[in-house]
Amino acid sequence: MKSKTQKKPSYGGKKPRKKSRSSLIDDSFFADKSKNKRRRFNEEEKGDNGDEIIDSDVESGEESLDDGSDQQEEKEEKEFEEAETAEEKRRRIAEAYIHKIRRMTEKEREEAGEESEEDEREGYRDSLVAKILQQEQLEDSGRVRRLIASKIIKPESGDEFRVLVKHRQSVTAVALLEDDSKGFSASKDGSIFHWDVESGQREKYVWPADDILRSQGLREPQKKAIKHSKQVLALDVSSDGRYLATGGLDRHVHLWDIRTREHIQVLVLAGTRTMTFYNYTKLFLTGQITFQAFTGHMGPVSCLSFRRGTSELFSGSYDRTIKIWNCEDRAYINTLFGHQSEVLSSDCLWKERLLTAGRDRTLNLFKVPEETRAVFRAPASSLECCCYISNDEFLSGSDDGSIELWSVMRKKPTYIVKNAHALLALSPKLVNGDAVRMANGHIENDEHVSENNCSSVYSWVSSVAVCRSSDLAASGAGNGSVRLWAIESESKSIRPLFDLPLNGFVNSLAFAKSGRFLVAGFGQEARLGRWGRVSEARNGVAIQSFKLS
Image (cartoon, rainbow, N blue to C red; front, top):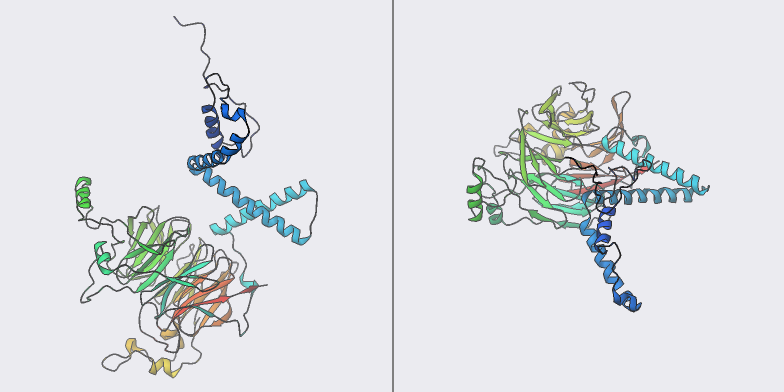
């Protein structure tokens, strides 16, 4: 028989809390679990009858309380930090960021001399904070475009590019951290520098010895080469500022720790995919399998791109493939196919959509989750570089001197700027004196004077860059100048702004997130070859500051 007396539900000695009005703090998504942890911590200090256990030493005098109070507080803080969950950490960082923005808005109002009642001021301040957060989210996602191009003031004759870092050979790639405080550069001599944007103070990354690289899985040189080439062609930095990825002629992707400037050894099971876990463990313990660099490409690594906000890395190569890596887990993910020739440039935003350009005259937009791709074909020439403007628009530069504006809605360019970097006057040194001659006396790559100045290698558009979530763009070539452009969203066109003199081949460009300065990697030779040379140019990294009206 069933008992008439029903057993009351047990709540562990605590009554259920009554529901109050719904708010962000009471919502389960934003709920802080630290209260439960503190409640359990207090219950442990209570007796069975619920009374608190008080130490007799504390009752006897106040001196003992004062002596142990500091140690007790330190112990509690340490226990709280150890017990902090990932959700609590995210909330703590978000609250700190909100308080920072509130202080900024309050400071701006004080400087403006605005005064009001306390309640109205707090409400107005919170609305400003909400607008700022919403605007930042829209700009980061690419849904809103900042109008910076019209505010750029043309620098005066004395405010031109300033050489920040010097290299022995041509700089092939530059990159900036997320906060624009530090930058990275690599050159053909294999040197990798980490430098400060303000002072220009640099720190060098040291390559491990060849025997160490071989023990890590570095493959033997191709063909008749007797030593590995450390020439770097591409680099990129992760959004969290932890990893630096470099790639070059040795066909490997190298991962570096930015904090220690050391080469990170990563695990790859090259050629052992069918191995069982037991055999792999046995070989690893006996030293036959070691930690090694990212292997897998059959040709030089020509481009690298981190997906923003993640540790996912894309690497493009001369072998016509793009490989996906997870730097956090040091693991290979997948290989993307589609290009019919060398992959030369790539770019990626927040979404898992990779934009690549190649010598097959195509731009490929890979949608990784859907395992699909969209192909955009250039009119006539090979595409040398590409970059995103937003999730729906992108920019490219080709070897015929033209710049193309693309949209995902069309397979052909929506706008083309021809002769973007035309040579106004061909120097005799560029054509004859500094041309690279072969053993038979002929000039390499048929480098002769032509009627069309843009057919020269010095007018090839070798680099393009766009200030994030804005209408400001820049392009570089070997004609001795960097050009700034304004991207017109309504008319779907590109409008030239002005030129910035910089002698040499501009192989890489990077805008600051705020648009306050532009960093250029330049040198005497082009990034991917030696089909042109400017002997009077220098090798290094230059910076150009801008003033906004």
